[in-house]
Image (cartoon, rainbow, N blue to C red; front, side, top):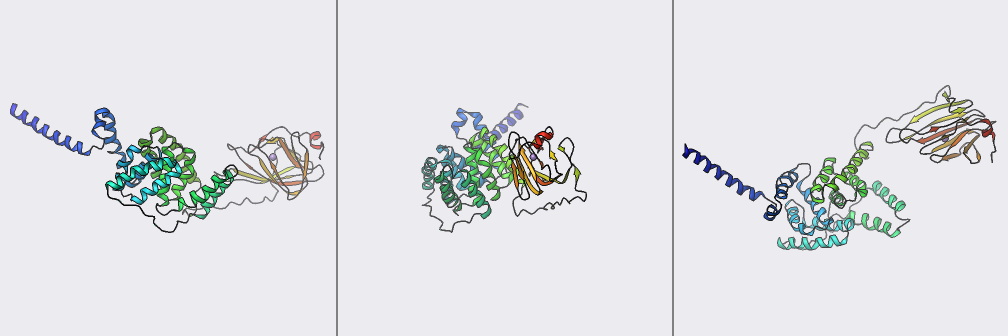
Length: 400
Ligand code: MN
């Protein structure tokens, strides 16, 4: 009995000894981590490398690209050589590593990039990797419509205040760097996204996340970038990226990229009504008013409008529009007036812009009818706030 028990104990020891040896071999955390912070050792080996790095949602090569990008962006030079070795093992070429550093010079600053060069050079030397040569391949052509939209934004938002920064953005950043063939546009986007998340710059993330997805990054991969970076840039940075990505995903669902195969919604025609439409409600209009052709755009559009025909002397009540209103005068003669302002006469072809939240009324003149087509955007589902009717005295009071 004793003998058997001892035998079991010995074989159990042998088995655990073997397991221990295997465990040691699988460990990525250095022994010092286990000596100082055994919990960190556990999370490093069992979670980060035992689980996260193995998740199928992002390829090992992509994980290496974003890890190295996060380390360079945040100036964590000590960890760069280890992850550069891993990146090379995961299929990132020396030329791609060099280009990754170049890309990050623009997005996280020259000092970070230059410090990274020193660290990467030690790995290149250790592995006998020679000097990286320029590919000499012709620059990539960026998608014309997207590039025009991007340049227009820079020219409007940046050029008036910082013309040289706008010029460098257009000419160097997008005209040269983003066109370099040494990295695929998808990889360039992936690295840029990783850097923005790692340095906690979610303001710039929507543009680059959209660009990454235009360049072929999937939604699952984009979400996995944030997940992976939780470990390399910290949970707060990863968590801050999530609502930004959520809005990007929602925006892309609402407006699918041009060329995406899906059933396009039908055009909608609101037919002219034979009877001229419905009567304007008496609490909103004075006099005979017909409202027709009411329409509302499909979300995310928030535009809507309709045609309003006023008989002579008819007019709206006082009202405001949360996001303003545009009136196209179709026929007749009309009056428009903001509270405290002059009463202006308008006629066919005239266009009136009424700014948001300005109390006003519009209608026909006292002796002629007027028809206008009115368009307004809705905020929180509402495009107008109605108030009291315009009394006759106020309606007739001085035109200019
Ligand atoms: Mn109005």
